[in-house]
Length: 354
Image (cartoon, rainbow, N blue to C red; front, side, top):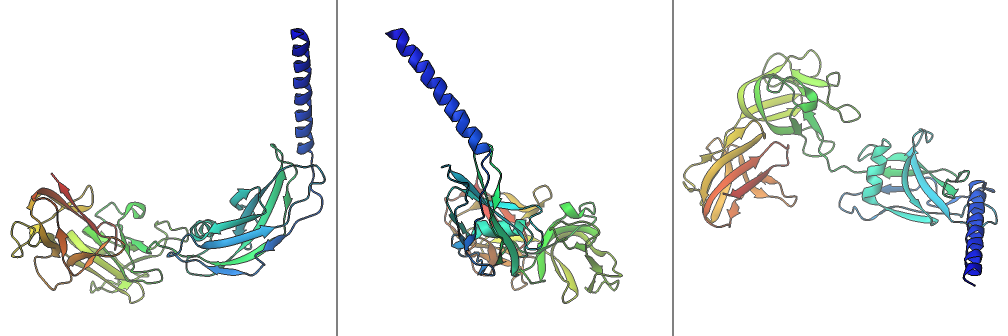
C-alpha cells in the first residue's frame, strides 16, 4: 500500500509540474488582441502642484483592461511618462500595478516631471501611456493610447550662483553658493570667506556650475557694477563677507562682517559680544567653549546695532532671520556655539553642552 501511494504521488507531482510548465509556456506566447484606452484624465487636462500640499493627488488615472484573449491571467500595467515631443525615447515608469487605476501624489509627480525635463513654476506638457504585459517573462507588450497632461511643478530649492575664486582654487563645482530670496528672483545673497579675486557663475540648464556657463564680474570700475560681458574679476581682501549680487539690477557688494553672540545668557550680558571664529574646514563660525546661563541672546555682526547684521529669530522653517531675541533655556554650563551661515538663506545655529 505504501509503494502504491508513493507512485501515485510521484505521478501527480509530475503531472502538476507538466501543467504548470505548459501554463507558463502559454503565457509566454500570449499576444494582445485589440487595444485599450486611457479613460481618465482626458488629453489636455492640467494640474498646478503646490509644495504646501505634497500628499494631494497630482494625477488620478483609469484605463480599460488590456485584452489577451480568453486565457485567464494577471496583467501587469506600467504607467510611463515623457516630456511631450520626446516620443518616449527614454520614458520614466511612474508606477507599476495590476489594477486599472492609480493615484499619484503631488510630491511624487513633481519629482517625476522634473526628471523628464519640466521647469518649476512654468506649465509644461508630459505624454502619458500605459504598457501592459503578462507572464513571468512578459508576453508581447501592449500600449494604450497616449494623452497629454499639463503640469505646473514647484521647487523648494532657492536659485543659486556659485562664487569661485582665489579663496577656493577657481573651481565652480566646489565653490560656495549665494541664493536668491525665491524662485524667479535675482537678489542673490550669502556669506563667503574671500581672499582676492572671484566671480559669480550661473548654473546651466541641468543645474551644474562650470566655466562656460554665464559668469559675472565687475565692469572694471570696482564700484559695485555687475556685468556678464567685458568683465574683470571682483576682488576682496582676506576675510568673511556678506556677499550680494543681482544680475537684473547689475550690482554686487561684499560687506565684511565678524559675528559674535550677545545677551543675558552670555558672560558679558548685553554689554559686549563674545566673538565667533571662522572654521575653514567646516565653513562655520564657532566658539569652542562659552559659559551660558538661561536667558535671552542673539547673534550680532561687527559689534554694533542697526548695521543690518542681527540674527535673533527662528522662522517657521527652522532658519535664523533678522530681528528679535533667541532664548537659551538649558542648564547653566559650558557650551560649544556653532553659527552656520554656509547654506545661503538657510542659516542655523547649535548650542552643544560640553
